[in-house]
Length: 308
Image (cartoon, rainbow, N blue to C red; front, side, top):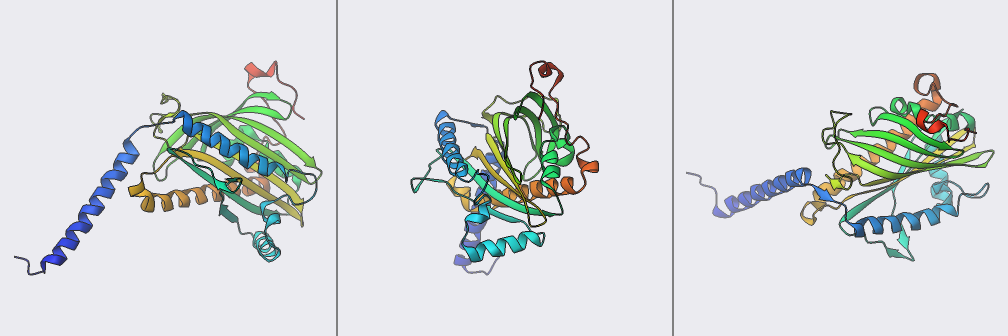
């Protein structure tokens, strides 16, 4: 028979019950289906519209352009030094509407920004990789398994990507995006990619397998927008990606445990995007062999305008 005091046994019992409950809740969160409600989608769209309005003020041919250009001078200098040393600058952002937090009922916004510097690169080479859509499955492997341009109209296009993620859970999506390319000056370009359809595959190991109904799946990814900026200066090219995505909310009992994991995965995802782009810009023959060639699917070519 144990000789431990009763209060010690009670504390241990409480600890094991708590851990067990959290484990069961985590399993339930992973397995239970979630449905994207209209109010959630509308609130996220409002968040995006406010964020894009704020972005628009710096989409100019001159003046402050990158996120770090708006930081205090001492911080700005430190960030630029880190970038020129080959480091990434990655931060989580929040968008406020007239100083107020934007509530997303039953949903969670993931808003991150990341910057990197490619020494010796030119804006032309960076733009060629950015627009090498048919090689995205090579540039961003294994996170992108398939890529193709479905329709092309000048600087606007419709892009299909099959996305894959194996951490913290294996998931795959068929996703369609509306892409808008912008040349702001001889040293600056930008591109926005807005999801128009995201459907989760029932079996991530089957790329041709069936989908869940759109908006009625595990809830890990309901919306995803990416905003790229490139600026040539200081003997190379600075690149910036701002990502805004939407997922299901986390139950309060799991928040303290799950949110740090979500943030770690988000930070790793941004770092992966920056590293993949830098690698492709530095080695286009290996990762972006079709750079400077943008084609639409054969079914869409008849109505597509030539690429610039």
